Image (cartoon, rainbow, N blue to C red; front, side):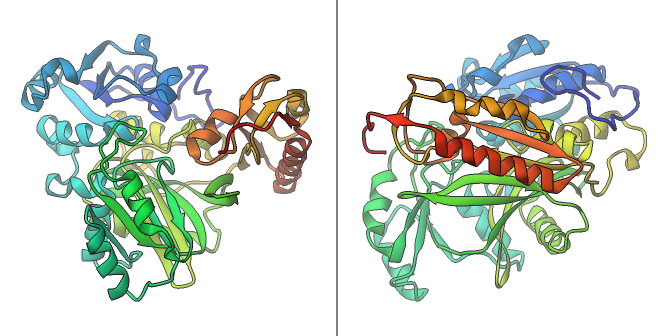
Length: 442
């Protein structure tokens, strides 16, 4: 569907279809949100960017103002949401969607005022951008959730731990309004939870949002999955289901290892999809992409978090390689297609696809970056983003942003064993990487 080199066409591109009237509005079109503008423009739909704030450093390379017919900055309206909405109405918007996490709340509020027929339930807005409110909404809907409390009072946490019988249990502490494992801390045995709680409370996280409360939750084990969806008129369609593998890297928990696309007939998919659709209903999703992380525990699925925007990190491009479709494609087709079946209920797996995240196991200065040259010769290579150079100082990988800064490799092939053989080859390259002069403590 999209010929832009940043989003190459897959083997199953949809035929050309007539464009819908109006303008597509993308709030914070960073990260995977960068793919919206080329896709809409190819479908004949004008595109406007609304910036809730300037892009943070990690998003700078994905910001392409030249892709837009107009760029509107929210700060120029001095926080006057009604005035901004009035300006957008002049553009006859066909949708207002978030490109990345920083744009979710503003996109949600603007959609309700400008395109209510393609907006999510306004009264449930906080459940789509605040993890504490999200868990409450999902629990109210009768779905099981991980025991947790969201508060600014350490005394409340202490009482909750006792009440839930979690004294001595592993806990997780994280900001309720962040993403990408930012600020996520595991507290083994609950020891030092107060210090971890106080260390982040009242500070701004890496997205510039004040941590006015903190989320404390029981640490649960299992396998983590992602169910990516696109919702249209309240109909939740599934674009892909992927399985995460995460590792502990020294003191840092849940460092990304791999992400694999699952076939739709995989035994775990029906249970995950049914739970996810319940979550989407619970938080009032009626239109747009959602990235839903679910832990499959011995007691069944439990929500990790929902993000009301496309899967980040360039995933839509890789999803098209795996399935021939993506959340970006479905968003566009829902607005320009004449038939509901142009936005399918589910997906097909065309190629076994695996993202291998690079991990630095220690800190130091790189002296033999050429060990990764062999990545280009891997039979299943689809995309490589290896940001390692001689003389570069690496820190121990501790979160998703550090992972993405280091790099990742996307493997895709009709033979699943070839994909995993190439993954093992990449890990061997990592083992041969030499880091000299130990850096500061990670």
